[in-house]
Length: 373
Image (cartoon, rainbow, N blue to C red; front, side, top):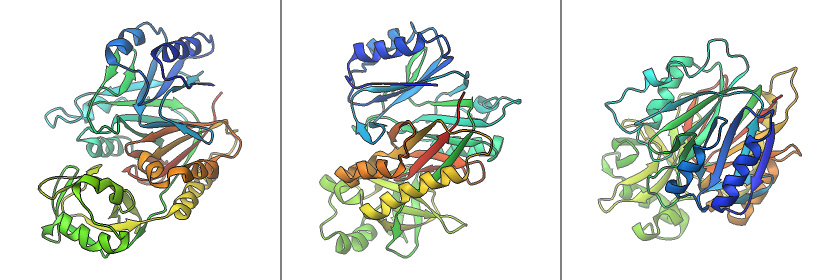
């Protein structure tokens, strides 16, 4: 396994990085993470990707992480000695296009120690349906780790890499023979009673307890935040007060409120099912950093015996970085134990540990401890 980083963010730096890693004779597959502020115009990138002779897959993310640093320009390439069994899902927002047939062969029948890396367009409308289809087809016997690609501009655009070029409204599934342990933790605590989502559409919450969603949200959040919740600065307050969907096992799945519409609806990253019960959450720097440390510990606890960990692959939420500010380096330091560590700050996180639910999370730290040859 080879890991190389380009910090320039230029087209030339990206091209040279791919060519350099691809030239290693022992590399079979390239896993590519790029920062959103890099010079990655599809009309330039797509022809260049087609010149890379080894399989490559990956995405563009709001930020990248390498060690305890995080940055918006540049790229990380992981050169895997073991080939990936790759599946690309198209038309992820089109309800008329079935998902199940596209993923039927996503995990090879003879797979052992399978780890599934998932890169998905973070603005696709059927991410939850993809997760359900994976669970129904393959259960939780394999480990999964990945996240939502895209830009903080909040515009859906090409954000995934394959040898054929850049894709949008798609997902890339990479099954790798990488023994691994995965840990998930978020650090957010409830500050409200459960609220019934009485009207919702995909990622948009319209009413809570039969009241306009924003009226309920303001009533709970404004006294705690000490500032008004207004459309022009909605995310400034909302990044510290997400929703939590209550699960049967008493844990919560965090949903990031992103936009307040003129109609008073609240748009989240990730679907919020109508009929679900949610709570409004709050956290602070210490609780989030402690949760990241816990995710790292859980990855270690679930790591299989008889293997040696080689690196940590981190998927963390971009809004955790925006919330923590300069303290986000402390979060990365809480995960770092001296092994090589790389990853992406994403628009939603995907994980399970081979035992737990497979979920699409927000505002959550996911740590993969990985052995490779």
